[in-house]
Image 1 (cartoon, helix red, strand yellow):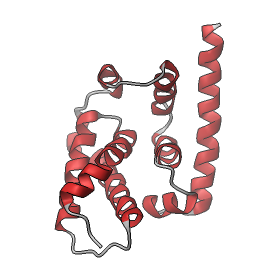
Image 2 (cartoon, rainbow, N blue to C red; image 1 turned 180 degrees about the vertical axis):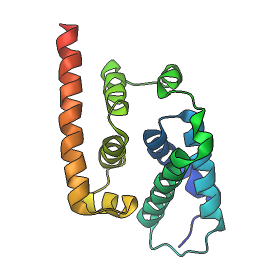
Image 3 (tube, one colour; image 1 turned 90 degrees about the horizontal axis):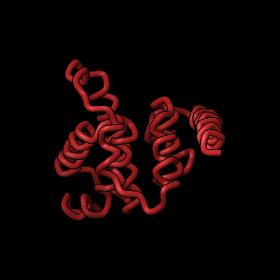
Length: 160
């Protein structure tokens, strides 16, 4: 099974962008990653078992491409994610606070938290996408949650 690149983009483009944005912290970098990811999808001859397989493959490619981009020489010049915040819309004010807190996490926790909570992936699926062990994913989720809880509690205490 393989969807057309256009159908795959319509169905998974936002999710791939979100994962790339979580990994890179930059709208421009995330846009580049999305483009590269869907070009690679268009070019692949791989036969996928179902739509979940396509989604996991796209997310894995996006995360790997994000890593490559972050290591590149050209990555030195970038716009901070905070500059992009004004362009985002949130249903509730709490959603914006949560997003900001997640984006302030170290990259390895931010990506794992994003894949688990925003993409609703299991620990084993995340481990496969990130090319790591399930134990590492569980550890990163636990540490990321602790850091997130601390950040949110501090913000909550500041509001009082």
